[in-house]
Length: 363
Ligand SMILES: Cc1cc2nc3c(=O)[nH]c(=O)nc-3n(C[C@H](O)[C@H](O)[C@H](O)COP(=O)(O)OP(=O)(O)OC[C@H]3O[C@@H](n4cnc5c(N)ncnc54)[C@H](O)[C@@H]3O)c2cc1C
Image (cartoon, rainbow, N blue to C red; front, side, top):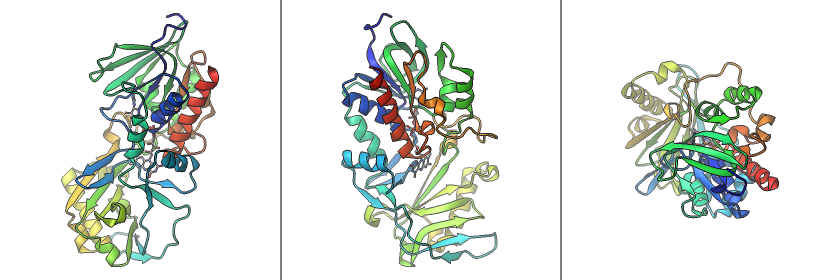
């Protein structure tokens, strides 16, 4: 490949929030972009389940009033937000066999904000601003190889219709670092220390199981409860109100305990335990939801790998992620690579804007 003969200016690997933010910024700056996503849909760890008129976030839910990048992105995309419902008392469950007690908590500061219609709208609106054909779904990136005039990105997947390779001037890898290290072959090989950092950086929330129970009425609100609960008993260790904007569809969501003995139970037994716990926390109607949904991120190979807990994790936002590789043509994005907002969507947006700025500065 000679300089000037590449297919596209920039290949972005991964259509999560970080990859889409990168692509959006590069497109706005006049660069041609191709975004390659392994899953059949965009959003990565942001996933909104649409259920008739209702919607529930199976992945990321909140951003916070003190997060400048998320606030500016929401405004730029014209997305309406509303505060997490926190009116009334919280419930705490301290020990098995002990009745839960109510707790009067101050209002959260900074405020937790939700997107009306669900968080995935962020990703859909960003993707809608890309030129037609810029997005390729259902396609794994398996390799990035440096050549004289640019990079060759190897693709594997059913959904493409594209050639098995794309050539580009720059590539931005916006997938969790552990997955990038395991699933993408970089040629020449990346520095040993960077590989250690990638493998040692845990993927945020990769083991989360989110449970959502939908009801006909918000009986907890009527009883003066906010829907917030903390439990030392489980199987849910925290619960929040998940009702859609204005309370139109009442719902609660909770995170399942990370304890293996809970996760290893068969789904029917575990679900029964979840319902029983909701009944203990919020009263008998909570044990009998209308509908119930669960999303186990730990079994999703595009979020989690086989290692569930790292003994000695590398802190998020390692400085090596800010250093380009492969002769300055390979850059990193993804929430785990960000030094200030890592883990949160704020970190994903910050990292995408940083990577795009690095590409633009490089010419
Ligand atoms: C249950 C849960 C709750 C959360 N709650 C919150 C919250 O309330 N607030 C908050 O701020 N954050 C929350 N988060 C975290 C938030 O979702 C992430 O910070 C953010 O979505 C990360 O975006 P990303 O683009 O960096 O990574 P990802 O969303 O993981 O995107 C990476 C993309 O790369 C793709 N990919 C992987 N490998 C390849 C490959 N080889 N080739 C091509 N594509 C590939 C993946 O399919 C994925 O689409 C939550 C996460 C989970 C799981």
